[in-house]
Length: 282
Image 1 (cartoon, rainbow, N blue to C red):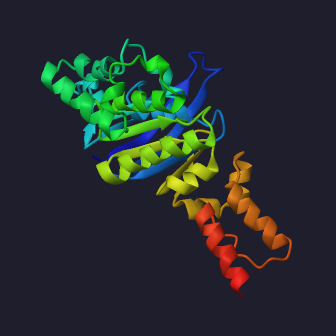
Image 2 (image 1 turned 45 degrees about the vertical axis):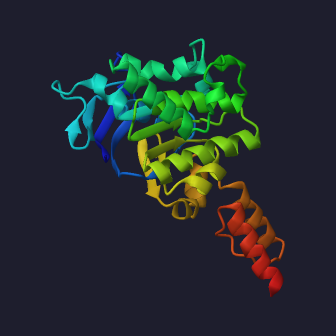
């Protein structure tokens, strides 16, 4: 289910003297099953771009096409988009509200007007996908650990069977183990369930590790669109946007500056270890 942003523009402010163009003529197509990293400094326009992609706000001009359908066309049932595009906001556990885990995950499909049997089937399947066992179903979601709460919140979105999922800083506030757990889950959904993922993150290490492709937004424009390695080769350009390289890449640069002849193209820990071992063997 490809999603296409077609010359999307969004302007904030009613007063013509105070107008701000948050998204400026962005055109991009995201294909089925891609894991996209979306980066940009605070205020760059990435959140507004995501709100447009998910139909939460309407553009000043341009449109969003899902499977070739214009979601802003008057004939398009915008309510149906939740069954196509799932959104996991920052601190997703704040989306939890029901008295049990199972009821919380059932809420989305129930709100879609599905039959009880289908609602429960979807909830069980979603909870299984995120690794929540049946013994947790009757527990209050508020009694769970931080990582479990986020898994349940993600299951609540998955129960609506989206083909495309947007995650806005889903690991905010988690420790390293929790971050790895959630990002590993998201990668699994992409690779095994063929779900298209857009991950918004301020962590260059995370997008370098998991994304197939990175979109860089700066001042409302799509500044870069390439593989992680290609994007992080634009060091000076990224710095001008208020962004940096992955920590592991910075470490490799420092090693080379100290006289150790390593290749500084490494963008993940595994790549860095491989390169360092190669140099040590020489």
